[in-house]
Image (cartoon, rainbow, N blue to C red):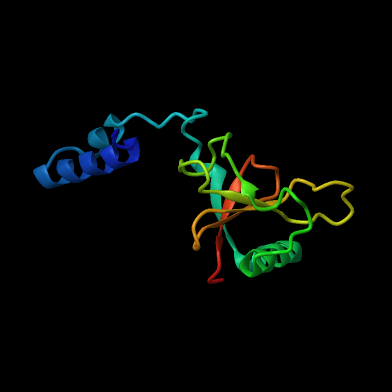
Length: 137
């Protein structure tokens, strides 16, 4: 398993401070991570408070909790994570659900993607970016 560059930088910094070396040299030793299709940028997954979600997302989360019925037949389908924005998991781990967009003639761009019982992600831009829903705020 490859150690993330951020972790290497922290370890190098701690070792330099412990051994009395230069912290600035150690901190610069680790290369900056490069975002690729296989490794999404850190900005692609953020956080959002449950209270900050649009009301339609609350409705969708309630339907998920109840097990449906859902407004679109695609709701509950396996989300493939082809964009690689969410953490890599085995096929079938993620499922997607429509967040109704008022005034839209189709499903719109908003979705809830679920992982485990404690992971709900919201996207308003059709999988370009996601926010992990914090149900505690």
